[in-house]
Structures are given as C-alpha cells and as structure tokens.
Image (cartoon, rainbow, N blue to C red; front, side, top):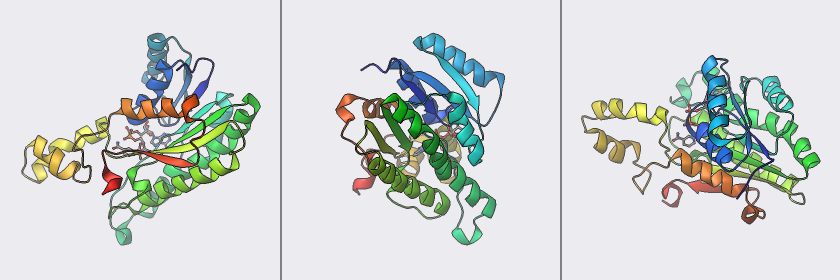
Length: 257
Ligand code: NAD
C-alpha cells in the first residue's frame, strides 16, 4: 500500500506512539509533519533523519496544543493535510475531589479540544484534495473507565464521540474518521514506570508488568508503537474506505472483559 503523494500531520510526534505512527506512515510513502510543543535542534534533526531513512519529505512544526489558536496554526502552516492523526496527549492521576483544576483544563485541551481545532482546519483541505483520513488516537479509556483518571477518561470518551460525529458529517465524502483505542503500549513513558512499580509492590520487573501494569490487558503483552502505526496505515488503505465513525481497539482483549 502506497501513501506516496499524501501528507500526514501527526500531533505530539517527537516520541512514543505519535513517532511510531509517523514512522509507519513515512514507511508507506507519506510526507510527514511532526509536531510537539518544543523547539529544539533535536526535533528538527528527528525530521531530517526520518526524511533520509524513508525518502519522504518530513518537517517539524512547533505548536502547543493546549492552545486552540496554535492547534489551528499547525494545520494552516502545514498547508496540506490529507491524513490527520490527533495523537498528542498527557495524563494525570488523582481522585476527582483532589484533581488539580489546571491539570483538568490541560488534559481536556490537549487530549480532546486540540482535535476539534485541527479537524476543523484540516477538513476543508481534505475536501479540496478529494480524499482524507482523520485518525484519532483515543484509548481503551475512551471505552471504559478507571478510577483516578477522570480528566483522561472524559477526554478520551469525548474524542470517541467527536470521531463518530466527524464520521457522520463526512459520510458521503471520500473522507473517513476513526479512533484507534490502544491498551497499554510499550513507550518510553511506560518503560520508565516498570522499575518504580516493581519496587513499590516488592516484585520482580516481570511480575510488576504482568500483575500490575498489564492487570487489565488479558494478552499480558504490551501493544507496540509499530502495531498502532500499522493500524493507522490500514485505516488509510482502500480496504478501510467503508470504515468510518468507529473505533478499532488494539488492547490485547482489555475491552472484551
Ligand atoms: P508520550 O508522552 O510519549 O507522547 C505524547 C506526545 O504528545 C509527545 O510527543 C509530547 O511532546 C506531545 N505533547 C504533550 N503535550 C503537548 C502539547 N501541549 N502540545 C503538543 N504536543 C504535546 O505518550 P504516548 O504514550 O506516546 O501517548 C500518545 C497518545 O497515545 C496519547 O494521546 C495517549 O493518551 C495515547 N495512549 C497511550 C497509551 C500508552 O500505553 N502509552 C495507551 C492508550 C492511549
């Protein structure tokens, strides 16, 4: 499957799942716009290295997606957006009666509202190009809940709702909108939690992964960023043309429980 000639904007893509998705789309031939809120030499170097590795055009555009105007400016600056991957996200864990208001506002803004702003600017571009894909990286927490993650669960359920709405608004057009709902994915962020979790529960790292971190993931395996990227590439394929307004879980059975 070739995405040659298409441009993908992947938000929050200088690490983790966003980077993995960007790499799989680049491998399939798409030009890429990488994004995060930082403006460091290494961000631009990442773009150069990816361009050299996959033989596609790659740019890095800084935008702080906690701000609606910067989210809109990201897509405007990209100029073209055939594939929009709304991936940027943060997490904070606390009981709802102790949840810091600033953290609530940031999670709702970055994990949910940024996708409203980017989608609103990208859709006219997709219509002009006569083809488009909106891919929202939601979560198993877009379909189920866990205690102490009120803002995250709210934002992820919200983005699943937004996905359904955009799917309906574009249903008669050659544009689809879907959400990928990962369970636990092996990212540097998750990797860093393993030693602390093992120490806290007085377990080996293997036990901590199986019994604590992957407690709700029946496969007892992490999904990989390549698998999330591969799912995004599939959603861009002709085979996925009639898949719209829905979710695809990549969660080792979590939501079947
Ligand atoms: P990560 O921390 O590695 O990546 C998050 C990305 O978002 C980074 O590139 C970061 O720079 C960017 N970002 C954060 N705040 C931003 C802001 N204000 N403006 C622009 N960019 C910003 O985490 P990840 O695990 O790769 O998560 C990526 C997405 O996948 C998130 O939406 C997360 O909720 C979702 N997700 C992750 C998992 C998992 O197990 N890792 C599971 C389900 C869903």
